[in-house]
Length: 323
Image (cartoon, rainbow, N blue to C red; front, top):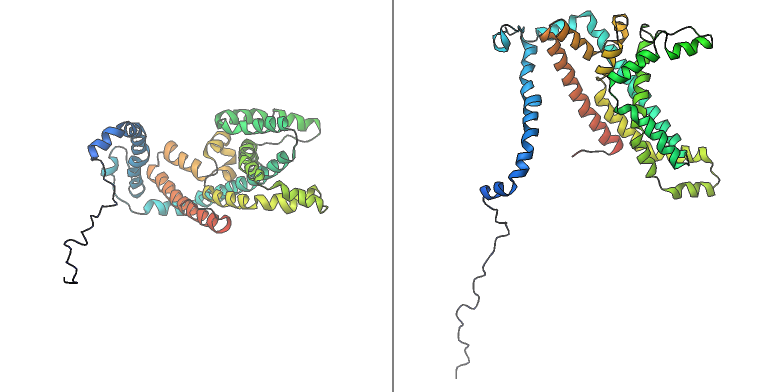
C-alpha cells in the first residue's frame, strides 16, 4: 500500500462573499410608502420659496436706480452709487450711533436684569410664590408691541400715572417721549421690563443644574448665603452668562423696529432713529427704494458677520457649538 494520501478535490471550496451594503427599495416604492411626509413638507417649502428665496432677487435693487414704472430689469445700473450716498448722508453716522447705543444698552441691561431676577427667584422657598411671580413676569414677552406701546404711551404720558406720582412727591414731569436724552433710556428700560422675565428662564434652568451638595459642604465650612452666592451660584451659571452674552452679539444691529416705530416721533429722531426705522422712512414713506435696499443689504452683511463672530466667541469662551 502506498503511504501517499490521495488528493481531495475541492479541499478548500470557494467562500461565498455577501455584501454588507443594504439593498435599497426602488425609489418609486420608497415614495409610495412615505408620500404623506413629503406632502406635509409642501406648504413649508412653498412658504420658504415665496418669502425667503424669491425676495433675494430684490437685492439687485441696491445696485440700480429703481423706478416702479421701468421695473427691475429696465432701471439703469448704477453699481455702488447707492452705497456712496449712504456714506455721504449726514444722518448715516447718527443712525448707526443710535442703533449701537440702544442695542448695546438693551443687551447689557437686559442680561443683568435677567440674571439678578433669576438669582432672587431661585432663593425664594415658596414654590407657589415662585410660580406666580414667574408667570406674571413672563407674560409681557408674549404681548405684541402694539399692545405694550399703547400701555406705555398712556402710563408715561405727561398726564399719565408715572408723572402724576412724580408730581405728588414734588418731582417735575418727565417727557419720556419728547426729550432726546430720556428717550433712549425709555426704550432700554421698557424693553427690559417686557423681556427680563422670559430671559431669566434659561438662568433658572442653569441654577437647577448646580449640585446641592456644594452648598451643604460650604455651610459645613461656615460659608453664609452671600459666600455661597459669590463662590458657588455665580460661578455655576457663569458659562451660561458667557454663552448668552456671546450669542446676543448677533443682534447688535437690531435695536427693536416695532418698539421704536410705535414710540418715536420727530422730536427724538436725533437719539431714537435707528437703521430699521430709517430704512422704513426712506423706502416706504419717501419712495427711495434703491437707497433703502442698499442700507438693508449693508446691515444684513454686517449682521451676518456678527453672527459668525458670536458663534466663534461662544465656542471659545462657553464651549458651545451648533455643529
